[in-house]
Image (tube, rainbow, N blue to C red; front, side, top):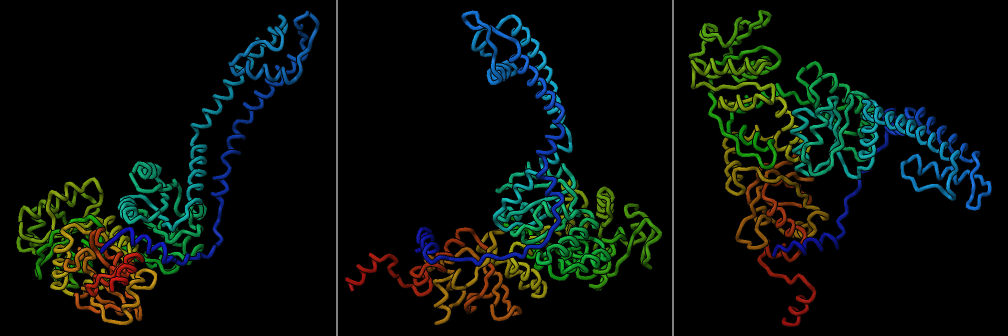
Amino acid sequence: MGNPLLVFWVRLLTGEEHAERRTRRWRVPAVSATQASATIFLVMRRMRAPLIVLIVIFAISTLGLTLIPGRDTEGNPWRMGFFDAFYVMSYTASTIGFGEIPYAFTYNQRMWVTISIFLTVVGWAYAIGSLLALVQERSFRQALALQHFTRKVRRLGEPFLLIAGYGQTGELLARSLDALGRRFVVIDSDSGRIDDLYLDAYHADVPGLVGDAGDPGHLAVAGLGHPHCEGVLALTDNDEANLAVTQAAALLRPDLPVITRTVAPAMAARMCVFGNPTVVNPFDRFGDHLRLALRAPASYQLLTWLESGPGAPLPKRGDPPSQGHWIVCGYGRFGREVTHDLRAEGHDVTIIEPDEAADDPDAIVGRGYEPHVLAEAGIDRAAGFVAGTDNDTTNLSLVAAAQRVNREMFVAARQNRPASAPLFAALELDALLVPAEVVAHEVYAQLSTPLLWRFVQELPARGNDWADSVIGRLTNLCGKHLQSLWRVRLSSSEAPALRGILEQERVPLGDLLRSPDDRDERLHAVVLLVARASTDADVHLAPPDEFTLEADDELLLVGAPAARRLLDSTLLVDPVREYVLHDRHVPSSWIWRLITRRSA
């Protein structure tokens, strides 16, 4: 019953309309836009002297050729006109050489043409050398790239996101957005990162600009004032730059949502002064995730799986200690967040810090990879160990030294550089903090669909057993690799075949998820969340098959792309809906309806 061609014609004939979002136009500085359009004037200014030399040489050569008398075929005196002289000099100076026209030259004319040839060779060499020097100049290449970038951004005719910073976080997020079919524009101060952007294989052309993201002019060129810009992501590794982007977006385009990152609570407070940005602190998020992993391992496993994006394998579920003694090495920003969260869960925490400035009564001054320091901290009876310094080699040494003494404890570590990933993977840690991945996963959860973000926020309160049952349903129907996530609204535009039925009868969720090919089989899809249109607070997570659907409900589903196409058939085509819900075969074309009516 699932006919893709029939679904296409239903979409075409029903005239599905999506209201075009109107974006208010704000005044955005366009200083860099003016510079981008001035490339031709830069070329003319630098090539002014060579062009003048060429023009003078051509003018003198042409004038001399008209003044020197020649002879026609009968031996009579004859003078060449300006057009004929200019024509002769044009093909002579360009080394084409058609010959002596309209009559053979005299010796005086040939001498003048010979002198003109050498003069034009010198002029062309001067002009070409100046042009090559101009092409090699950094300012010219930047102006040319800026003009090309501005033209590509101006031609964008679909919604896009403005990403400031193409580091590890920006690259991870860009790949996830590209997999969802979302367009984006990138600006970064490092030219090497923009070069990497152009080398990456994305489905669509991604405009990239080398510039200061905190400069309002550069943001304007990157599309801040574009009517199709739908959000700004400040993901640089510099908190001041992220603050500047947040300020510019809030003041110049207050209608746009802004997502930014920082590791300093004071900087987060400064960012929140401007508008209502979403601030992601990877240290704080990891502390919350660690608490969830200790309290509900299945919930943490489901959370990390959903935030990893389509295609991600099911992560391993840890076996953390419920109570016990913990050791935290490194009392910087990350160490303070983790210590606070562990003590909030009721754990006893000992801090190891080489700096004597650690303001904690349970701090031990020393280096955590030294045996006597670990013995003083109680490594033999520790239930958990955290290596949280800002140096990867130090963290690797800390973990190796701790595991040599106690192999049974829960071990967490912080990875700062992407190149260290194979080394940390070889240690088989129970929890690993990669700040770039934490930020990218959370931003992806917010941008992919708002329903996924609501599910992630509600998930920790549901308990470990509930999360374990959801994981079981997902793996049974979709396997151990995360499938596609999509949203469906049971409205007259997105589900015209189902809207009238919902107002007349009771439709269980399990009936909707039957296959149009064989209603006795279930679609390979799971409904993670159902949001009622009546109130924002009415949200149902992973509802059972007996759950009754209502008009204008929003569904968040995860499943195979084939299941999405089959579900679209049920939502759009009336005969398919009748078969799936009521096991009735209804003729779909007018000729079959006519034959059926005559048979009846």
